[in-house]
Length: 346
Image (cartoon, rainbow, N blue to C red):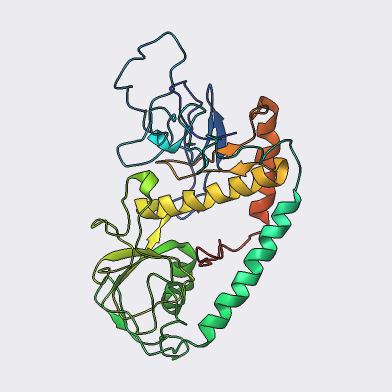
């Protein structure tokens, strides 16, 4: 049950239709499609092919079935097999190399958490209630923060301090990149996927650690909190560009605000595919009660690994229901909201 490209098996390729419409006609965006391979599948944006996985560095030394090699792409995208002794290659784990429980039993993580397919399992409701209670806590914390005037510099050098349409001043903890974009043009705001923000400073009541910033994804090889290449707004993040949710309030003066569109920036594509992976994960949980593991974006799509116990697996006739559930979820137009969760709360 891990939709993600891993094989070199040929797949149907998207051929862009030739258009005879006038130059002023609007282009209709192509739809996503589920392309199956020998073992996995990937929801691809038409016309964008996944990079082929590198050849295995070492040939298997025994006649036993060897764990698949990593297919991490040159740009850092995961999506390959989970072989190797560490269980980290390609971000996938197999039975032989998967992580164990932190005890003397040597049990695999996952254990008996999945015993049978259950539609909309009860633990989904418990999780939603937990997040709702944490949201109330975060909102209460936000009430004690003090908004202060901020300035935002656009890529063309224009310095904005207020909404051009309403005259309302831009303030920390209130004004978001979307608000800034909408004050210029609603079309600009609606076409952006994510913002790239470079801060001149942070307001005094902004705590990067509390906000969950500053650490890399160690499974992606990004290192930890002291990784010098980390672009999060943690310690030393001032002056470095960082991806910022469009609806997340700004927390300081901005020396450069970039509004990224899907067709024009690789970071925007990555964010879009990341969000899309969450939609796929939601479909798997609702349909089968799968235990989600890892589901990162790829160069032209995304996947989600999920745990279904040792006696079940994703079957050929599961593809259509998953596609239908994904379509149903997208029609609901659910909001993607940031929620900081402390280690104790988690």
